[in-house]
Image (tube, rainbow, N blue to C red; front, top):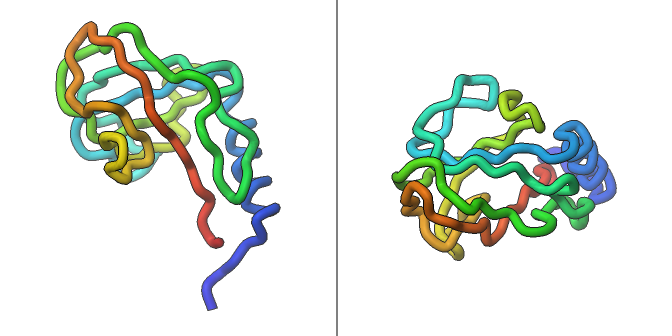
Length: 135
């Protein structure tokens, strides 16, 4: 039998993750494949750097957390095709999570209206969700 956790336990784990991130975490959207794990050095070109709201996530519910408020950037850093993201503590260097970027409806962990970024363009994140495993 596979390990299963109660929804309350999954919610507690996610709320602890959000607490550990601290206020105003930083999200970087990057080109190319994600590194092997979050301890591995960054890869790809940074297309956008977003300082997220002080309360970046809604409280965990049903074993998942979703973005809170508006996640947007008035000016993309570079041009390229978004492929992965990395989420850092507010220092912008301590990576705590990473995942895929796709267009809205594309099934990525983070979705945007277009994965094609042009330096200086404004954009916003359509949806972002992290679901705890072992349901």
